[in-house]
Amino acid sequence: MPHCIIEYTRNIEKDIDLDKLIDVAFESVDQSGLFDRTAIKARAIGYDHFKSGQDRNDYIHISVKILAGRTTEQKKQLSDHMIKVIHPHIGNTKSLTVEIIDMDADSYGKLIQV
Image 1 (cartoon, rainbow, N blue to C red):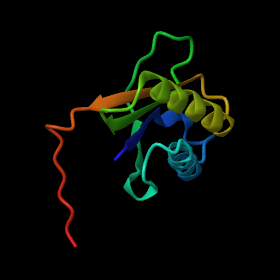
Image 2: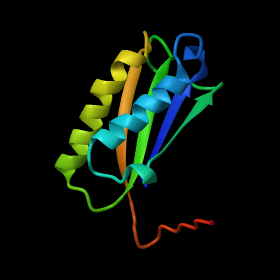
Image 3: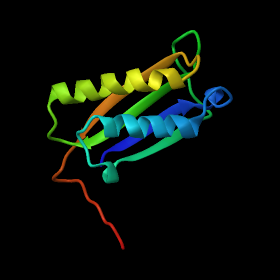
């Protein structure tokens, strides 16, 4: 935990280094000091079909799913930090948004096999 999920419109792939974007997002979550580095997961999902009310359709939206328990201030600091650190890596992408989502610890399940 946490899960950092980068959703993006595929039309930005020609201008963005997605592997670098995933690395930068991962590191920005780690730099928050809120999580154990070994528990952070980051991935990207591209969309071929999308629509946006903006003049241009290209965007990146990052959801960071975390177990509940952090303060509103901690979550806001995390999202602000992520935007600051990730912004230089999005080229001319129209929109970058970050959302911090609390997950209910009582209903979260996890299996780790060794």
